[in-house]
Length: 258
Image 1 (tube, one colour):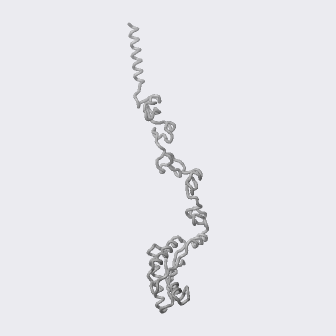
Image 2 (spheres, rainbow, N blue to C red):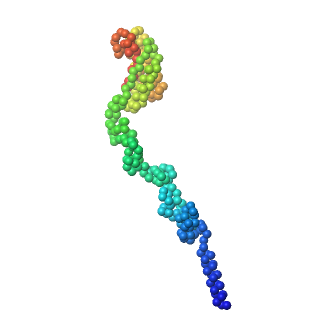
Image 3 (cartoon, rainbow, N blue to C red):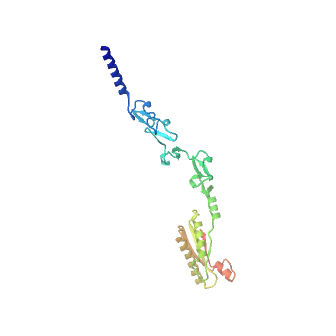
């Protein structure tokens, strides 16, 4: 009888020990209690008696990192990466390591793909050089290049008129583009000219009206720098001949940088 009691107690002890040792997912005592329990992530690990996705980056699939025991992308936007790195395939990485990593026409500069040019702003050039047409040049060369790029053009008028023709407006619109490309210039002078028919006083007055018409149109197109006007009347003809061809050349406004 004594043996039977002892045997029964042993069985009960084994039962309670086994019952106490068993845990129910997601509770755990060690990693083996988690393995294979979650079909979506069969490699979970035991952390503080709970099955979690990961303990380290190596527990996650390629491209994911272990963040607070969850496998997540390192980034989804560039803002989550420390500059100059950007978010590439959910990882923070440099945009480029070499020129071949960039598209055609771009070069890898400080791990960024940038236009394959010497400069885009003056700050990228060593003083006293400045940036002109993506090249670093001294300021005098900048002015010279700007002159080569564009020249202001004269406009012509009909007989006894100071109203701008469509051709004149088109030319002045080109002049405005030239003016805006010349930050080295701060003033423009517009001269009004006439042919030699009419009195001197009349032609001086007409010349000023022509200069003012040009000034007003330039301002309407957004020209911000100083624009002065002067009338030359009939004093400085381009063509001294006495015929319609010469007169049409002399009825004009000259637009020049000062």
